[in-house]
Image (cartoon, rainbow, N blue to C red):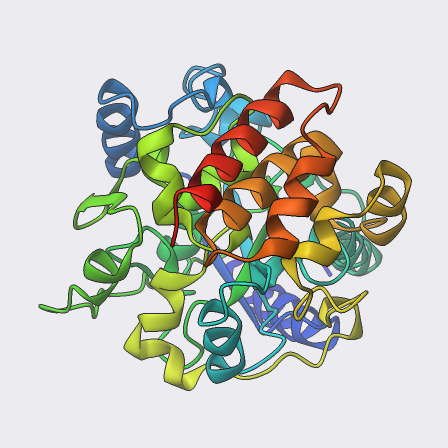
Amino acid sequence: MAVNNPENLANLAAQIKQWGQDLGFQQVGITDTDLSQAETHLGNWLANDFHGTMDYMQRHGHKRSRPALLHPGTRRVISVRMDYLPESGNEMNKVLEKPLSAYISRYALGRDYHKLMRNRLQKLADLIHAEIGDFGYRAFVDSAPVLEKALAEKAGLGWIGKHSNLINRKAGSWFFLGEIYTDLPLPIDDPATAHCGACRACLDICPTQAIVAPYQVDARRCVSYLTIELHGPIPEPLRPLIGNRIYGCDDCQLICPWNRFAKLTDEKDFKPRHRLNSQELLEVFAWTEQEFLTKTEGSAIRRIGHERWLRNIAVALGNAPKFEAIIEALKTKHSHPSELVREHVHWALERQLEKT
């Protein structure tokens, strides 16, 4: 197909969307590269130090908000979404309501989405190449300075909600995003419109009140940041608020009324592995480093390492009701080689011992 006239480009765009759905993406949209509004929002967020220790958020200058700086020649962005919801909201809430259970953000229960989606995006690019020949492109899945949510919003996949996640009217927010930057001058889709209205459920439910204003998340207070991104000690005032969340947090998505339209995923790789959706705190706290590496192989969880895994679980154990088995388990890590682990274990022991 020659891509030198509007009709052929429109036909190609339609084919790309169909190929994307055939490859397992629930939606495909196309947008241009003008992210000036998102660039202003990002600049204000960084100026408020809301990124905490995530220095990479400001390390790349304007590459994040100006796609052609990241991949020269980029004229369009093909944005895709892939649903990952592995179980119902009722099942998730049951785990959160049991203080001795370990809650792991549901995006991380199965195989790491990065490789799976990147492989699918490469297959999509290969199909385009087979149809039109050589073209310029680069695929991304949360692996480079890309404003994926702003691009997806412009491509019509959903709107950025007050909790800063993307929401789709027909699918909620339980999905991953990926992009192909390309030099093809494809026709673009209409951007999504916002439908949060006066709702503030996500602001009110946030356990650490990290959503400091609509569309403004202070990562330094966010449980996902504290348990995943933060390498050092978790600030003591925030520890009691984390509850039994040992890797990430889904509260703002669980409460969102639009997620009543979310559907369970058919992707086998996103289904829970090693009972990660129903583990007990004492069980995962007892994992050796080798057990941790084995049971998180191919999982996004592995990136935090065994040390921060124990740090997070120690906090959750400190938040649990007083239980002799917890005290004994914490004592086994009292002399752990890691100062980070020891400090959090000591805090948790004090919390347990002071409870009646």
